[in-house]
Image 1 (cartoon, rainbow, N blue to C red):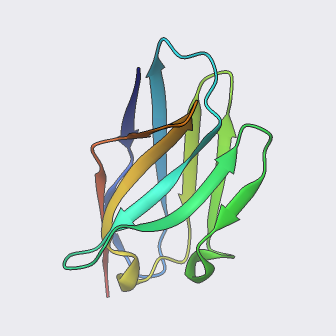
Image 2 (image 1 turned 90 degrees about the vertical axis):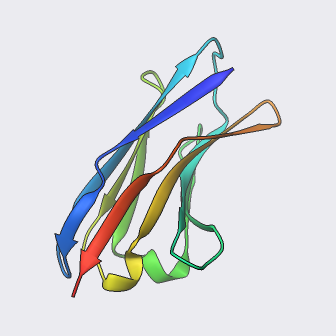
Length: 115
């Protein structure tokens, strides 16, 4: 079992920055990939960014150049640095982990970007 706990959400003005962190805990030794999804009000959850245990990254097109994902495999931590935030980035951000064919989710952290 893996538990994911996010932190770092909040309210920020457009153009500002926020840093989200997620820590994985549990008995599992290796997490194959970790990342972030988000869900805006009235919309479906969408992929934002991910990083594999080997360091490969992938991003949603609309956040490329503004968001940066990084991970510390030893600490089972993934971080999402969000810069140049836009009102359309407002959403609940969920940490996601994938290990041995199983998907794990955090409870989410709210990010609100005011115009």
